[in-house]
Amino acid sequence: MKLEEAILKRKSIRKFLDKTVKKETIEKILTLAVRAPSAENTQPWEFSVVTGDVLDKIREENIKKVRNFELPPKEMERMLVERPKESIYRKRQIEIAVQLFKLMGIERDNLEKRANWLERGFRFFDAPAAIIISSDNYLIEAGTFFDVGLLTQTICLAALKEGLHTCIENQGVTYSDVLREHLNIPESKRLVVAMAIGYPDWDFPANKVESHREPVENITKWYGF
Ligand SMILES: Cc1cc2nc3c(=O)[nH]c(=O)nc-3n(C[C@H](O)[C@H](O)[C@H](O)COP(=O)(O)O)c2cc1C
Image (cartoon, rainbow, N blue to C red; front, side, top):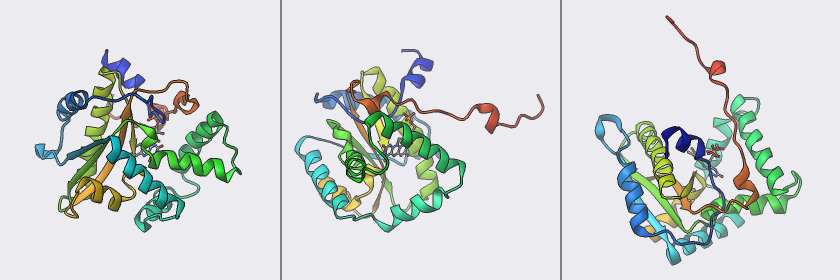
């Protein structure tokens, strides 16, 4: 697969086929993806790859928490502070949400359908496997997040070569206590982000979403050309 094709083909997949992903395949993807760069080659990442009963248990406990409205304060704050109401970021967030809701037939005032949709992320979009990325807590958060960002995109691209698709997701690490318990992740580790991984179900309406990008001319200043 050509690089340009892979970059354009990558998209967030929110439903997967009920088809097992082999451990060796994920191992191959991660082995390629850890070629991603990191500041001073610190490689501030560790993986917990999870499938089967363990993943099902995590999904189950996540859903219980969502239904109890247990949103960690840190997550709530992030949502409110990062995207003020009138900002361009909020507009872009709404644009993708509107598109997804339209594809899924979710009316804005249908709270039940909206709640069901929200739960999908906490179920890792019913993917056969999930990758949880953690790092040492004492490392500076901003640097770690930058490096893990490079890594996750590389995982997404490497997965395509194996016919696998992904969704990078914050929702997957919202309930860190659930993950810590089932994956034996100590408090000394920070849960950075999760990824759902599997074979895509192209018949699922939300998988047809086409996210837009701001044209480069709107976000770029050129000097000395
Ligand atoms: C750090 C990060 C966290 C994300 N968290 C979620 C999430 O929790 N739930 C979700 O549905 N999508 C999540 N996404 C996917 C984004 O919504 C998606 O990348 C964006 O809408 C652009 O769409 P595309 O990936 O299909 O190009 C996340 C993406 C990133 C990079």
